[in-house]
Image 1: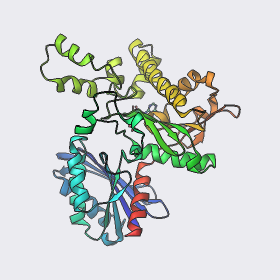
Image 2 (image 1 turned 45 degrees about the horizontal axis):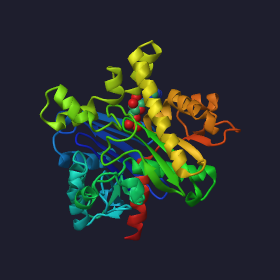
Image 3 (image 1 turned 180 degrees about the vertical axis):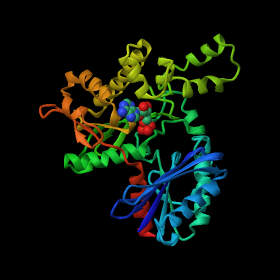
Image 4 (image 1 turned 90 degrees about the vertical axis):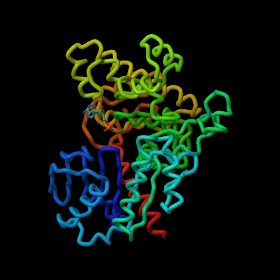
Length: 399
Ligand code: AMP
């Protein structure tokens, strides 16, 4: 059965076509700069074949149509009717969805209604659901919610210590983010540990441009560093992570700002690695500058590691026991040996020992702790697309 996973952003569309249940990637691609005359359309398929073209792709309809027509013209699929399921990454399922769900009209309306919680994402994602529903009427459309993995947090962990009316009236709470990634590495870690997932306790570190740390107890999320929005938690590429909220009016006063959204924008777009270093939000640039002696880049590196250590330490305590493993994933988690080594060294007093050789290897899934480390440490490349395809396949097969 062919299943396509869709990850739609405001100016990009990423997709992967899977043969399920074999979990085989038949083709994958993306459109960048969607909505412009110079959109970039890229596909890789077959035995390393590639297709790339820069062209005008002005609407979401034309983007989706182009993906499907190219699937046919490149002979990746013979008939579009062979695509039986379309899995959509949806950023917010609010408090309603605790699992992936077949999308009917009612679900689609709810996705649109959650736009307040994820203004940059849900509306676009819902729009693409409508587009693909029109283009592939035979296929089952499935929503895979990014925060569903955190739907079962205990109120002790998801409520903020503020007047409870804000939760009761406006649903102000921790929703979490990157749930599909934390869920994927949790399932994969249980396999690697050879334990039932329901008996697996972990601390999972999704370190990409956006970054979050989660505590996993008995295979379920216990707590996570992302909050009401993805601005909370550890330091990120351009986002501050946790700060004292009193800083916001103080900066407004000092900078003579009248619109609070300007400060929130700065916390989202001009902070984190970029803000501290003054150089870049890209960890590779920070690492290169730090190695060349740039002190602000070194400070950004150290602050980035320090925030991670603080979260891991607090989640270790919250779990109430030594976790079975720490898991590093996403762009920085998978590729930056310096972060893994620094975090491992800071946790040495808790029995963590990183094997420098395994840590320095590149790319693949592997154990990076020494045999005498009291907790295993793994690098597990995340695969949100496979998780989306798997959920979509499971639900499509049931329909
Ligand atoms: P993601 O959002 O998961 O795509 O991750 C993007 C982040 O991963 C960016 O900060 C990149 O600089 C970082 N990254 C990718 N490759 C490397 C690498 N080899 N070393 C350090 N950071 C990397």
